[in-house]
Image (cartoon, rainbow, N blue to C red):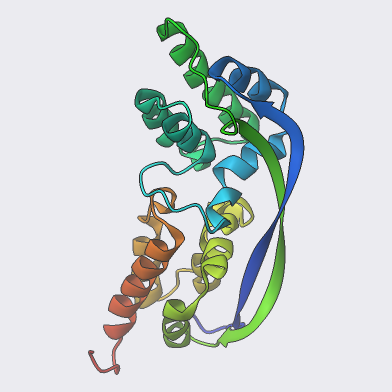
Length: 227
C-alpha cells in the first residue's frame, strides 16, 4: 500500500439513541402530510439508522416507510415502490424527501380510498443520534484487517461501511479510505467493495459478504498460503 507508513485501522462501534418527534400518521394521506412537516433527521432515521435496530430484519423492504406500507397498510405496490428507494443516490435529504413524497402522492392518486392502518399501527416519526466508541481492535495491515472482519459487530459494520459513505469524501466506506486503493491487492479489493449494494442486505449479510471478499483477495497475496 505504497511506501508511506500506514496508520492502523481503528475499529469503532456505534449505538443508536432514538427520540420521538411527536408526529404520527394513521393513514397514507397523513403520512404524506407528516413527511412534508418532519425534520430531515427523521427522514434520515427511517432510511439509514433504523437498520441498527434489532427488530429491523425484513429482507425485502429496507426502510421503515416501505415496511409500514406493507405490514400496516397492506399495500404491496406502495411498499415495493418505497422499498427500492436508495438514499445514497440523492445529493441531500431534501432530494430524498421530495422523491418519497412523489411516490406517496402517486399512490394516493391511484387509490379510490385512502389506505388506513389499524389502531396501534400508526407510523411514528422518529429521529436519532448515533454514539460512536472505540472497540480497542486494531489492524496494522491488510491481512490484519481481513482477520478482523468476520468478528466485527453489526454496529461496526454499519459505522465503517454504511454511515461512512455519508461522512467520508467521495462517499467511500472506511475500508477503501484506509486502503487508499494503492497496490494490486488493495486496488482489487477496493474495486470489489465498490460493487456491494449494502442497502439491500442485512448488516449480518453485509458482514458475511465483506468477510468473503477480504478472504478471497488477501488469500491471493504473494507469499500467503491459500486456504
